[in-house]
Length: 279
Length: 286
Image 1 (cartoon, one colour):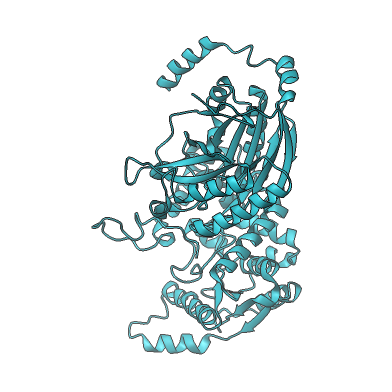
Image 2 (tube, each protein chain N blue to C red):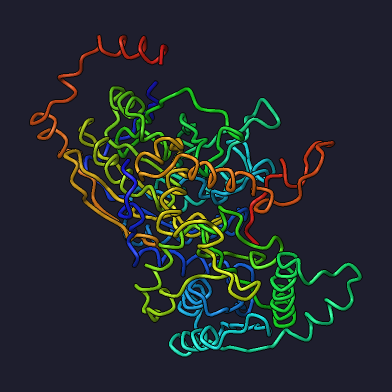
C-alpha cells in the first residue's frame, strides 16, 4: 500500500448518504424529537450540522452557539450562522462567560494560568448546556469529533466528545474537508486553521506538531497495521515523528473507552457485558 | 448426504423471490409478522420459494442477548414458519440462531429450509467471521456438514454469508448435486464489491444457480447493503435488488440453463481430485 492522499478519497455521495441514514435511523430508534449539537463555526461542527439537517430536516436540528469572552471570534459565529441559513437549521446563541466566571470563582484551587485545565472547563460547560437542551426537549446530542482528533486524543474527556452519536468520527480531518466541499459548505470554513478554542490563539496543527495532510496519512498507515518504519519511509519523514503520533494514539485510549473496573464477577460492565447498542 | 423427499416430482423451472428486508433487532414476534406478510406477497406473485436474509428471525447484532433468543429446531418459531409455509404452499429459507437440543448454551448460526410438508432441513454456518466488527465465534459453534436437500424445486444447498469466501463449501454441495445454492447474508456496506465478485464466481465455477439475499437497515452502526441477486450458472446476474433499502423481487430459475453452460465451460468435468489431497496437506501446514 502506497500512502498517498488518494487513499483518503471516498465516494462522497455514498458517504453522505450513509451518514445521513445512520443519523436518521438512530433518531427514529431512540424516539428523540430532534437533534442538538454545539456549533463552533469550525469545519467539523458545520459539516455535522449540515448532515443532520439533511438527514432529519433543518427544522429538527438545533445548533447551539456557545461563545465565551476569551475565545469569541466573530468570524466563527458568522460561519455557523451561514451554514445554519444554508441548511435551514435552527440556532441559539448563549454567552457562557457568566457561567464560566462563576465556576472559576467557586473553585478554591482555581489557577487561571493553568490554561489546559481552565480550557477543559469550557468544553465541559458546553457539554452541560447541550445536554440540558437534550433532556428538556427530548433531543439527541450529535457530536462532531473527527477521526484524526479522536485517534490523537485531542479532545476534552467528557467534554466536546460527549454525545449520543458521533456521525463523522470515522472520517479523518482532511476527509471531513472533502465531504464539506462536496456538500457545498463555504470554502472559507474548510480553509481556516482548526482550533479547539480552549484559549486565545490555540491552533490544532501547531499543537499536534504537523499538518493534518501529513497526520492523516500517518494515522491511516497505523489504522492499516503498517509498521512505523514503513510509514516513515513512504512519507519520507523521521521515524520518531511516526512513533510520537503512535504513542499519542495508544496512550489516549483511556479517553475513548468507558468505565474500566477491576474484574471481579461473572459479567462486568465495560469489559465483557456485550449488549447491542440499539436503543 | 442428500436428503430425499421421495414421490415428489421436480420442477425444472420455478419462480424464486428474494426478500431483502430490515428486521427488528431482538424482536422475533415482529419479525415473524413481517416474514408472514412477505410470504403472502410472494404467494401473490406466484413464487415457489422465498428467501430471507441471515438471522432474519432476530436481526444480526444480538451480542449476549442471543442466549435468550436462540431456539431449538424444531421449536416455537419453526413451528410458526411451518404453518406459514403450509398455508402458502411454498418453500421458505430463512436464518435464525439455533440452540442445540443436547445442550443449554451451544448455538449455531443456521439457515432453515421449510416447505408445505414441514421442516425440510437446515444448515449450520461453517465459517464464522471473528475479525473486524464480527464476533461470531464467540457465540456460535461452526457447522461440519454440507447438506443438499432434494426438493420438488430441485437440489438445494444453503450457505451463510462468510462461507462464500471459501469455495470448498459450495463445491462440495455441487458435487452432491446441488443445482441451486442459496446464500443468506448479513453483510455491511464496505464489503459490497467482495460479495458481488464472489456470488458470480461461486455460480460460474460450479455451473449452478446462486441466490444471494442480504439484510438491509442499520444495526449498531453497521449498515447492511442489500444488493440481493440471482446469478445464473454462467455468472450472469438475472435479478438484482436495490442497494441499502428494502426490496422484493422475483425471478425465474430454469435448470435447463445449466446444461449448455456445463458443456461450454466444463468445470465439473475438469475437476482434479488429487489437488484436494494436496490442498489438505498444505492447509494443515499454513
